Image: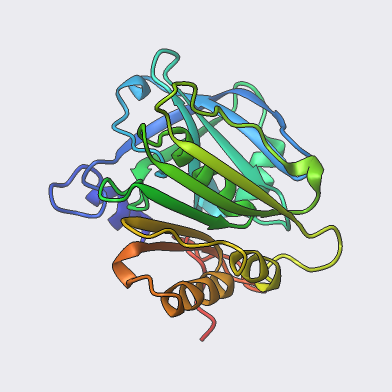
Length: 263
């Protein structure tokens, strides 16, 4: 889909961007979060009215040479309506238009974005949740865990480089709040990003609860495929799995922001 066509669909009833708006964002905070994550906080007029559900993203419209635009999608880590601000946390593994812009972003920089986008959000028909992801899935998993309703429970398997990349999140405080078990998986030089082995090994140690359960998978395309296969082999129905490939090993994302096809 061309960027012109994408803009035509913003706010159109029944379309893929029906609830999205075009925002002219300004950077108000930027800097390293961990050794491999960078945080950028942005604001815009009207952003406080954002219709947002935890797990959704913003599509940043990254300027390129010759007035060309490429889109890159980043999950909203936090939304503060009082400040009219959104936070995005980005893994800086590799190089590309999106990571280059995030790495160099400074206070006062401006960029256009379309959002909120994305259908991978908390399922209200589940009371147990399983989050599986690599670095690209960490912001969405943490945002959704912070939004879990009282009485629910979650397990998260999140693959990162080293313990230095572990991140804090706001745990439930009420006595009836959700219970969350976060298991950080450290590659520590033993594997490469996009290798499904660490996640699959950890998944084998997770007991899938009986009753309404939903799994959310966000990682490299091949890892997502293998995790889906493992979950269905253990009895989950396709309707119980929300899966999103954020990148494809060895290939840059396409101009519309999704992983490029490998042929």
